[in-house]
Amino acid sequence: MKTIDRVPVHVSIIMDGNGRWARERGLERAAGHVEGVESVRACTEAAVECGVRYLSLYAFSEENWGRPQEEVNALMALMFKSMIEELSTFLENGIRFIVLGHRERLGDELNRTIDDCMEKTSGNTVLTLVVFLSYSGKWDILQAAKRYAREILSCPGKADELLSIDEDGFGKYLVTEGIPDPDLIIRTSGEMRLSNYLLWQGAYSEFLFSDILWPDFRKEEFRSALLSYSKRDRRYGKVK
Ligand code: IPE
Ligand code: IPE
Ligand code: MG
View 1 (cartoon, rainbow, N blue to C red):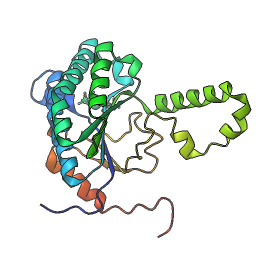
View 2: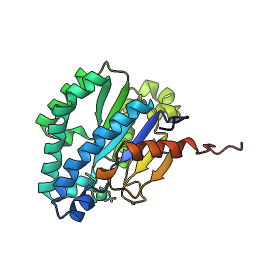
View 3: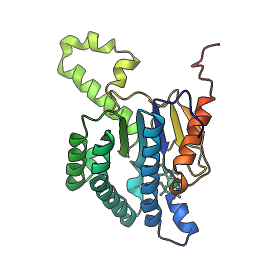
């Protein structure tokens, strides 16, 4: 196996193509989501093996609430089941688990399981696994702006000081506070769009679009994405 130099600190994945994977096999869409969980396991393992520190996954967007109720229910039930089942693996492998997104839209039962999983793994340091649930980039920026505005309104005496905020300062109001911006954003299934994902945080990410459907995206594909990243020249607008 080739060793990978310049391993990205934070890899983020828009996991797409579960429905098409199922359709190709004459199965229900939900079967694609179930198989996709295997890819989550494989990529999490590969991330640990490669020394990636943050792996984040776009699992359910704010827009995905508009899917048929049956599919939404199946996805929520799968999240619930997977979190319960994976907790021991997280604990054994030093994985810190975090869910970010519009948590109020998730059910109480799921929220309790998320809190439990986050609390029990909070001291782990090998890999931080972030799952974006009921997330969208515009929602995130808007909730940040509202929290910031509320802070100004509640302490008018500090308004001038608060208004001198810079980009890093504003970034602290986003739900990703404390998590470095993604170095690499991968999208599977051949689609080439952001679908309202990390709009602020992805400002200087490298992008990799793969034709492989998410349930087929396993360790080998993850490693090959990292190899491709290691050859990129990140200039950040400067001249080298
Ligand atoms: C990604 O797969 C999973 C979610 C968005 C929840 P899709 O369900 O979008 O699969 P396709 O794009 O229809 O194939
Ligand atoms: C993006 O996939 C959201 C997630 C992967 C969770 P979608 O399948 O929902 O996005 P569109 O509809 O192709 O833009
Ligand atoms: Mg899709």
